Image 1 (cartoon, rainbow over the protein chains, first blue to last red):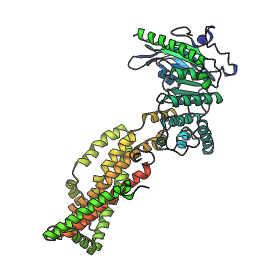
Image 2 (cartoon, chains in turn yellow, purple):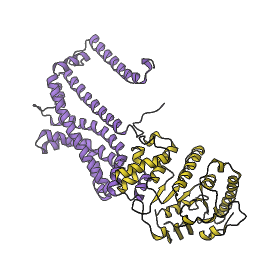
Image 3 (cartoon, rainbow over the protein chains, first blue to last red):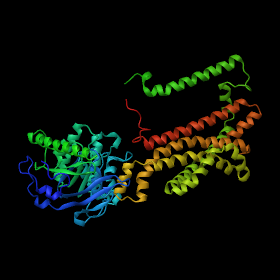
Length: 292
Length: 266
C-alpha cells in the first residue's frame, strides 16, 4: 500500500492508509504516541550544490521502529545524520522531544548511534569498549560496571567481556557495538545499515535479538537498511525513499505484534508484506531514475 | 606432540644457529689450515681468547658505549615524542618545525659530530648529543604519523559523544599511535648505538671513560686485529640486545591486538 506519492506529510500518511491493505494502520498506541523527533520541512543541500534531501516532513513517535529504505542516493543516511544532529539541515527544522533535547552524554535525553562498521577500539577489551560512552561522560565507576554487565547480557556476550575485538567474529563485534549503544540507555537509537556487512544467517540472528531488545526496552529506533526482508521483519513503520532529490516516496505501517520471530519470518503475511514493499521500492527506483 | 626436529620453534632457532656454527667452523678451519697470520685475519678462537683475556678493559668500554647509547635513546624518546605531540597540536608548529627536523636527519652525523664535540666541553655530553641527533628522527616522524592516523569512524564516535580534546588524545590518539611509536623505537634504538659509536670515533678520546669505538681505533693502530674483532662482537651483541628488547616490548604492548604482533594462525 502506498500513501500519497512523493512528499506525504508523515501524520497524514499514518492516518490515510487504505483499509484493504494486508497491513492495517496500527491501533493508536496511546502511551507511546509522544513524538520523539519531528522533522519539519528539513532540506539538505551540500556545499557542492547537490540536493541531498528535498524538504522532508516526518514524525517519529515513541516506541516506533522506523526503517528507512530506498535506492542508493535517496538520502536515507543523510536523513539519519540529520536526526542524529551530526549536521544541520540547510533549511527547515528538526525538533527532538518537542524541543526538550540535549545531546549524548548529557543528562536527560540520549541518542545512540550504531554505524555499519562496529568502530571498536582494537586495543581495548570488550568491556572497556562497551563502557566507553560512560567513561567519556564521566559516569560513576560502579554504576558504569553495572550497566556494562547488563548490556553484555542483553546482547549475549556476558562471557566475552575479557576478549579483544580481534578475537571475535563479525557478528559478535556488531553485538559489542550494540551493547555500547545500549549502555547509555538511549531514548533514541539510530542505526545506519548496522548488519549490512554480515552474512544472512548472522544478520537474521542479530535481527531477532534486536527486535527482542527493542520490545523489552521500549526503544525508539530509526534504522537504515538495504534489505527489504530485514525492514519488514523489524519495523513498525517503513519509510520508502526515492532519489534525485532524496525524498519520501511512501510509507508502510506494519501492525504485526512484537516480539516477532521465525513464525513471522516464515508466514504468508511476511511474504505478502515483502512483495508489497518490493513493489513500492520498484516504483521508487523508477521515479528516482525519471528525475535525472 | 610433534617430533622435535619439525617443531616450528625448534627450526626457528636451530636453523640460524646451525648456519652460524657452520660459518664459524669453516672460518676457523680456513684460517688455521692456510696458516693466515693473526694480524691479517684472526680465527674465531683467537677472537674468543682475546675477548676473554681483555675482558675487563673491553667490558669497561662496552659499559661506557652502552651508557651513551641509552642516554641518547631515552633523550630521543622524550624529545621526539614531545616534538610529535607539538606537531599534531598545531598545523603552524608542524609546518615551521618539520623542515628543520628533516635538516637534522639528512645532514650526516659524521659531518656534524666534530662541531658538536668542539662546541660542547664535556665529551660525554657531546657524545650523547650526537647520538640523540641521529636517533630522534624516526621517533618524531613515526609518532607524528601515528598520532594523526586515527580510525575516522572512532573519531566520529568520540565527537558524537562530545569527548574533550584530552579524552580523545588519551583514549584514542595515543593507543592508535602506539604501533607506529614502537616501530620508531625499534629503528631508533639501533640508530642510538650507531650514533654513539660514530661520535666516539670522531671524538677519538681515550682515558677511563673511552668506549668501544676508541678501543677499535686504538687496536687498529696497534695492529691488534683480534681485539678489533672482539670489540666488534660486543657492539653487534649490544645491537642485537637492543633490537630484541624493543621487539619484546612491542610484543608485550601490541601482542593481543595489533596485526603486526598477533602472529599468523595456520
